[in-house]
Image (cartoon, rainbow, N blue to C red; front, side, top):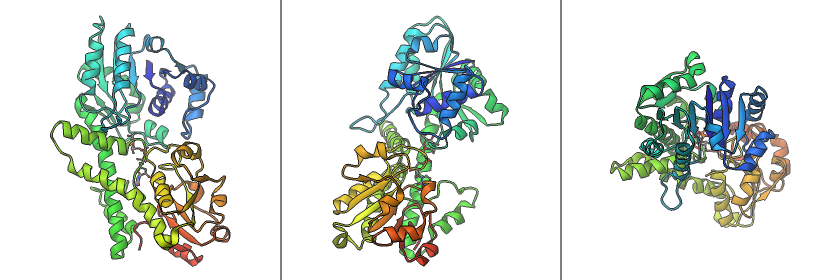
Length: 436
Ligand code: UGA
């Protein structure tokens, strides 16, 4: 089957490469000529494990190509995916749909064959109706269906998530849409991945409900972690104790500095806006968004406490290990490290940081933060070390070396990577999250 993927960003590129790997003939389209030129030269616009290799092998096999021309790219395609960005609209937090609608318009102007138009971008309920209206206005003579097919890819694990999904959600209003989507995902279906067919509006809402629920789970355990610190409990034991209940499940119960990234913050906000528009409040999600936002600065204050409090902190130096919102990505969007560094700077602390992939993205977002070339360089002369992102490279630091290089052996582990007894036995003053 010929498939067009409009938008060669994170979602489009990963989905396009994986669909090509299933044997489909995929064209990835993007307006940015520089990006397409680099992709044609095998240079990825993002860091995602395994992506460069997957793209290269499918380009070589002749199943994957790149173009800036939407008209040429969609020609003969039976499925046309819209995978462009839907950032938070400046000022009000609504998802900005202008890119999605512009693509729909261009599809209407250029489509010459029957096709299913698939919205993969995360879009508020009712967007599919508008896409259908825009394309319908072109009065095309052939059959068109507009389908919703949200993505559930995690950055850093996106290829695995695409190829071994928990489920594939397809919101289609007619048989044509359902049939073509079944063909698109036939290889996964044969692999027994559940294909869930729903109405288009339900499918659009599933995406937001899933992200809001996961954000809620994280925020819940983060507040329980704070309570553990006060009452003398261990949040990891509590998480295990509740997670073994199948009704709760053990995933997404890792306490930390608050969720970040391109999805949870933006999608919770957009869901709140939809709820507001329909006069149907989602108060739990409202609380989640607020609690998470305040948590990031609170984590900065935790580091200030470890330095001996605001009186002692001024003029001291803190090493931040890990800047990206999670490991295995260079994505800095809404990363807790940004607010943590700012809080430290506000307290008069010098911040030096190291991240295996994120420093280039981080530098403009963190003015005044000095970037080091390695974890050990960052640690040298530091009065405290804050582990912010759990990159593998920080999981087994040589603690004797760390102690020798740092000015003071103070470790604030915001991801609970280390065992308190082991680190304290090495002579560190050790603080973590939710472990008294
Ligand atoms: C998330 C969802 O997990 C994907 O299913 C979804 O497709 C994606 O958003 C999206 O909407 O595109 P992602 O943002 O890449 O994926 O990353 P996650 O692994 O979900 O982590 C998000 C944030 O939550 C990170 O800051 C992470 O550190 C934090 N987190 C996650 C915790 O603090 N504790 C946990 O137990 C899990």
